[in-house]
Structures are given as C-alpha cells and as structure tokens.
Length: 324
Image 1 (cartoon, rainbow, N blue to C red):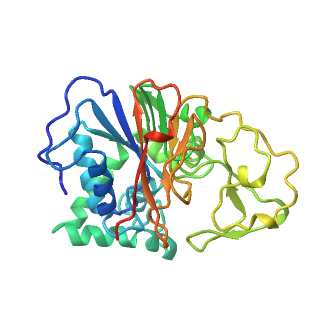
Image 2 (image 1 turned 90 degrees about the vertical axis):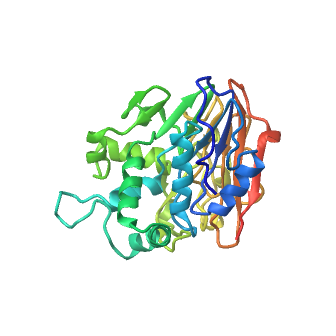
C-alpha cells in the first residue's frame, strides 16, 4: 500500500486524531488497521490526523515499508510521528562517533546487530540502493519530535516527564533534539542522555534484594521499568512493568513510591508490551502497545481522540490482530 495518491492536507486544523501504537515492522497489520479507520490509498478522511507513537522498526518483516508509508503520510500533512527508542538507536547505529572513525555511537556488536537484522534485510529487499534509503530515513528520524502536546492530548513514546522534556527545545506543538542534543544524547551522564532514556524508555529502578530477570530479548536485568502512570500503587503488579519477571520473588510490597507525574490530562504512550485485548489504563491514560511483535501474536491499537476531549472513552479504542 502507498498513499501517494492521497490529497494534500488542508489548512484547517484537525478535529480528530488517531493515535497509533508501536507497529514494529508489521506493515500488513498497519495497513489493516488504517483501512479499519477509513484510511486507504487515495482516501483520507477530512479534519483527521494520525499520530504515530514510534517504534516503527525492528522485529517485524517490513520495517522499511512502514517507514516509507509513515513518511509519506507525514510529508503529505496527514500524520505526525514521534521519535522512539528503536528509531533513536537506529540513528546512532548508523552514526560514527567521529567522521571516518569506523566506530559507531551504538556499537555494532552481536546484540545490537541482532536487533536491527530484520530491519536491514527489509531495506535490502525493498530498495535498489538500500544504503541511500537508510541514510534518508536516518535523516528523517533525526527531525522527529520526542513528544507532542496538541488539541488537549499529550503523546510520548514511553514516559511524559516534564523535567526531562525541559531539556529539549519546544517548537510549536513538539519537543525536538537539535544538533547539539544529538551529539550528547548517546553519551551517558549527560542531561540529554538521561532525558532521552526516560522519555523513550521509561523510568526504571533497581529490583530489591539483587533480584534479576530475563527480558524478551534474552538480556538479564537488575533494573525494571516502573508504572509511572500509577499515582499510588499498592501492589508490585501496579508498580513494576517488566515482562519476564516473576513478581512472587519480590518481598511484600509495603509502601510503594507515589508518582508525581501520573497523568491528569489525556496522555498516550507505547513501549510497554501490554498483553491481552486493548484497553485503557484509566480515564486519562492509554498505553497503545499491545505486543504486535510478540512471538505468540498481539494487537496493533489506535485511539480516536476528538480535539479537546477532557477524558478518554473505551469505545474510542480500535485494533486489529497481527496479520501474518
């Protein structure tokens, strides 16, 4: 599917937004979701804009195809797309630490090579000149906002954290990394690195008692993502978000930390690999990552937000099961 025949966006501000979760290279599934939303070649609904929460690439069979489709929509004015951790990593995987050094900001080691293998293969299959296509998409990724706030909604890939957003420049409805930010964001112990980690990967904390777990990529971890969206968690299940961890290993929860950044306005994010049928977290909060790339299959989800809605409605969720 291409949308090259879609009309250009009008000057009127959109009144409806479809916020779309992590698609991870599953182009056929994304096309099926767009068709369910009334979007197909040559057809785009009036007064509507798409917001992609990032993680377009890796894990699925046609990341290059998804990037092409989403870029086409964005460049026609029909969509906006966020910078997420997989796009951020892809940029640094293809950026040398210094020009001509032959060393890259994201090391070309076994783990990182495996993460992008399907993505690189998809560029080889789609393009006569895959290196040029990758270079073009890397340049596009560098221009994406790391967060958006518009028409009463907030969107970020992993965690809406005002203190870390403030590290980056706000321009219009979005926050962006400038050239200096990109120079620093790959280097640990810089404010840009910490901010990018939080906004694109979420808040983490060490597990108690030296407990470890193995994540979905087979990596052993001592730190786990926390549910920053839960204002006052009472159980480990409400505080820890780490697929692969056995929560019965943890001591009694006791008094868990409260969250000062829990949403009080409609907020959308992906990243967290929720399972089961898509659902809202609460009236202000929606994670739209429902594990489309899971080995056992999952869903690609979208939320239909009408400009200046004050709360979220479960009836506005849309989804399709993974195709293929």
